[in-house]
Image (cartoon, rainbow, N blue to C red; front, side, top):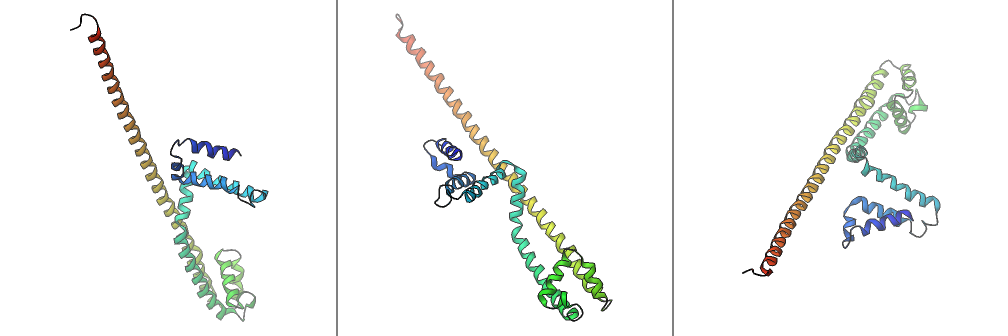
Length: 226
């Protein structure tokens, strides 16, 4: 109820142009979050209603500039990270196929199928317990070290550093975008304030002219004035 009253007050603040309320993205977000609480099936479901109201937490993004930069940076990094994810899957498949060929008979629990081999390599990618996998493979051949070390270098070291680079680059671009938007907003405020000052000057000039006319009229109406 409080949120509904808040939206109503904010709408009335726009006077005769309430449609301008919806020109701001966050205003639209707040309106739909409040309106969703009145949808059939949502109002009766306490859990769902709380989840809908929880969405208002995202409003903090507009209040905290650093949070906004972080969210924008993560959003911008989704597309390049998706491409990198496809490359990671291809790398897992290629090394999984090779591992299945080399170690399926020697270590069937880890490399019995291509799927098991890819899952094992994913564990190696996280650097969790991969020395045990290496020791088991080293019993078959000392050249197994070349297989695992090359995979760790390509996946864990190179790919992870690329991920970090993509995220940092996206955050830097997001920071530039936010700063540019802030400068545009400040410029608009200055223009509006400048227009307001010009309007005040015009009004002051009009008042001065009116006062001058009134004085002349009074002088002309005085007895003995020619």
